[in-house]
Image (cartoon, rainbow, N blue to C red; front, side, top):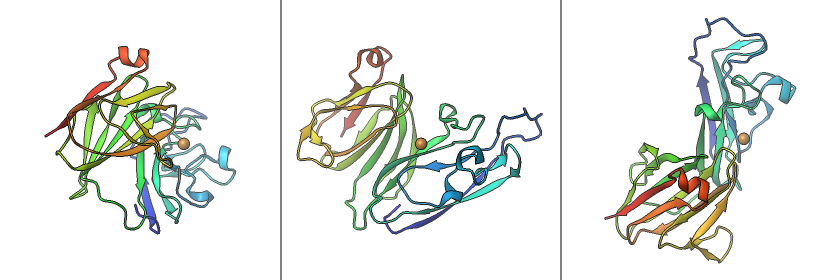
Length: 228
Ligand SMILES: [Cu+2]
């Protein structure tokens, strides 16, 4: 998205609503977003939280929507990388642990172009994510601890988003980058639950990325960054 955009998102719930409902358990699925602006009907939460309505698609606690629409105002000042996630499925806190989350990237007008953008989620025991091809904007999914590739001398951008409950220390070997909002060049960053860190580099040599924290390292949180 670009600052100044207005966005309408329709969410369809295709969960089998014919299964016997469990009283008090919501099968509604919603989108709750961070960073951009919206009014209360687009909060993507249950009435028990927002006091207005159940704002998701599917069988709610009291009413049923098969589709729900959200309106976002991607106002000036909202540039950044933000998480969106379900808030309504089975609990009033959402089902990120079932994979119901993603990222939005809001660019300023006339944003810099990157050859590739990598969205890397940091779970408690693995990295995973997707990438965006800067030329055609095509998105492709990655598995866990993916091998990332880049062409030599191109500029690429990393979007790290931590999920789960662990504190991580991300490192990309042999590279330094600007800590956003500062003039400091860093070669590792501490990132905790629901925090994010966005940085860009010029791809010059192959490297690997890893989580330096011992327990995460033992679980194998490490992947390749191949530059050709
Ligand atoms: Cu949230």
